[in-house]
Amino acid sequence: MNNQWLSLVGLATRARKTITGEDLVLKEVRAGKAKLVLIAEDASANTRKKLHDKCSYYNIPIRTVENRYELGRALGKDARVSVAIVDEGFANKLLSMLD
Image (tube, rainbow, N blue to C red; front, top):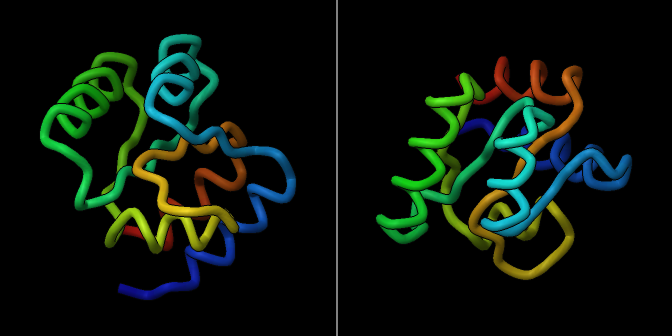
Protein backbone atom coordinates (compact mmCIF):
# COMPACT_ATOMS: atom_id res chain seq x y z
CA MET A 1 0.00 0.00 0.00
CA ASN A 2 1.20 3.48 -0.82
CA ASN A 3 2.22 5.24 2.41
CA GLN A 4 1.59 8.83 1.30
CA TRP A 5 -1.59 8.69 3.32
CA LEU A 6 0.55 8.71 6.48
CA SER A 7 1.76 12.24 5.85
CA LEU A 8 -1.75 13.42 4.99
CA VAL A 9 -3.08 12.03 8.29
CA GLY A 10 -0.23 13.84 10.05
CA LEU A 11 -1.16 17.07 8.29
CA ALA A 12 -4.82 16.62 9.27
CA THR A 13 -3.72 16.03 12.87
CA ARG A 14 -1.67 19.22 12.92
CA ALA A 15 -4.72 21.02 11.53
CA ARG A 16 -6.76 19.55 14.42
CA LYS A 17 -9.07 17.68 12.07
CA THR A 18 -8.63 14.21 13.62
CA ILE A 19 -10.20 12.51 16.62
CA THR A 20 -8.61 9.41 18.16
CA GLY A 21 -9.86 6.82 20.59
CA GLU A 22 -12.73 4.41 20.15
CA ASP A 23 -15.25 6.25 22.36
CA LEU A 24 -14.52 9.66 20.88
CA VAL A 25 -14.61 8.29 17.33
CA LEU A 26 -18.00 6.69 18.00
CA LYS A 27 -19.26 9.97 19.43
CA GLU A 28 -18.18 11.85 16.27
CA VAL A 29 -19.81 9.20 14.07
CA ARG A 30 -23.10 9.47 15.97
CA ALA A 31 -22.97 13.28 15.77
CA GLY A 32 -22.41 13.08 12.00
CA LYS A 33 -19.17 15.05 12.24
CA ALA A 34 -16.86 12.23 11.13
CA LYS A 35 -16.27 12.20 7.37
CA LEU A 36 -13.98 9.14 7.35
CA VAL A 37 -12.94 6.54 9.92
CA LEU A 38 -9.60 4.74 9.77
CA ILE A 39 -9.22 1.54 11.76
CA ALA A 40 -6.12 -0.58 12.29
CA GLU A 41 -6.13 -4.08 10.83
CA ASP A 42 -4.95 -5.48 14.18
CA ALA A 43 -7.84 -3.96 16.16
CA SER A 44 -9.90 -6.38 18.23
CA ALA A 45 -12.83 -8.08 16.54
CA ASN A 46 -15.25 -6.33 18.89
CA THR A 47 -13.85 -2.87 18.08
CA ARG A 48 -13.87 -3.58 14.33
CA LYS A 49 -17.47 -4.81 14.42
CA LYS A 50 -18.67 -1.88 16.52
CA LEU A 51 -17.03 0.72 14.27
CA HIS A 52 -18.09 -0.99 11.03
CA ASP A 53 -21.71 -1.25 12.24
CA LYS A 54 -21.90 2.40 13.34
CA CYS A 55 -20.25 3.68 10.18
CA SER A 56 -22.53 1.67 7.92
CA TYR A 57 -25.61 2.84 9.85
CA TYR A 58 -24.58 6.51 9.59
CA ASN A 59 -23.22 6.16 6.00
CA ILE A 60 -19.67 7.14 6.91
CA PRO A 61 -16.83 5.57 4.92
CA ILE A 62 -14.44 3.37 6.89
CA ARG A 63 -11.07 2.09 5.72
CA THR A 64 -8.65 -0.41 7.22
CA VAL A 65 -4.96 0.46 7.47
CA GLU A 66 -1.88 -1.71 8.18
CA ASN A 67 -1.61 -1.69 11.96
CA ARG A 68 -1.99 0.39 15.11
CA TYR A 69 1.67 1.41 15.13
CA GLU A 70 1.56 2.85 11.59
CA LEU A 71 -1.61 4.73 12.45
CA GLY A 72 -0.09 6.07 15.66
CA ARG A 73 3.10 7.08 13.84
CA ALA A 74 1.03 9.02 11.30
CA LEU A 75 -0.57 10.91 14.20
CA GLY A 76 2.74 11.52 15.94
CA LYS A 77 1.60 9.46 18.93
CA ASP A 78 1.88 5.93 20.27
CA ALA A 79 -0.22 3.13 18.82
CA ARG A 80 -3.76 4.13 17.86
CA VAL A 81 -6.51 1.77 16.75
CA SER A 82 -9.10 4.18 15.34
CA VAL A 83 -9.12 7.71 13.96
CA ALA A 84 -11.96 9.88 12.71
CA ILE A 85 -11.23 12.55 10.09
CA VAL A 86 -13.65 15.44 10.62
CA ASP A 87 -12.77 17.53 7.56
CA GLU A 88 -14.38 16.81 4.19
CA GLY A 89 -11.32 17.79 2.14
CA PHE A 90 -8.90 15.60 4.09
CA ALA A 91 -11.42 12.74 4.05
CA ASN A 92 -11.89 12.89 0.27
CA LYS A 93 -8.15 12.97 -0.41
CA LEU A 94 -7.51 10.07 1.97
CA LEU A 95 -10.29 8.05 0.35
CA SER A 96 -8.70 8.54 -3.07
CA MET A 97 -5.31 7.44 -1.67
CA LEU A 98 -6.60 4.39 0.21
CA ASP A 99 -8.92 3.03 -2.50
